[in-house]
Amino acid sequence: MDVTDCFLTGLKKQEKLLHCITIVNQCIEGKKYLAGGIVYRTIIAEAYGIPQKEHDIDVIIEQPPATITLPAGWTLTQNKYGNPKIISEQQSIDIMILSNHHSIMHRKLTPSITHYLTGVPFSIQSLVYDCDEQQLLGNAGIDSILTKTIRINNYEEALYDAHLRNKTLIELLKEKAESVGFTPVYI
Image (cartoon, rainbow, N blue to C red; front, side, top):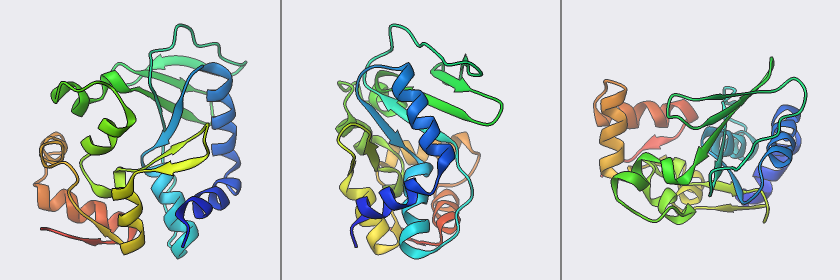
């Protein structure tokens, strides 16, 4: 199975997501990546026919934008992490600036997509779609999808995430796996 083809096929079926990508491309210059549930849930739905809940749209950018010019009907605000959030009546897009990512700051790393991928809590999250190159990046995330399993990708970040959600690490791993119909791997 080619996970990039699955993503692109699934992407074509989501007018709302395609519209959001167009908005982000118009508003923000520079390299952009789709990240989070919108990426892996689109692939899982397409590859395995496992229905997925609608998920928010997360876009990673490498540099803080000098300006964000919004089309009519869109408003700029901030999310709970202080990053830009673009909203309309129907949609919202969280813009994550790499230098603001918890794991990158905590590990005192140079902001890069590679460091982002090694710093997300779970393997399924270690996956992004490069909007410019139209390709998926993240071997751990791709492997997770191919094996239908979810592992801890970064132990410290997984513990941090569990703490924020007032759950144990095992509870959170199990919950994440069940949410997409995969098997949790506890080792």
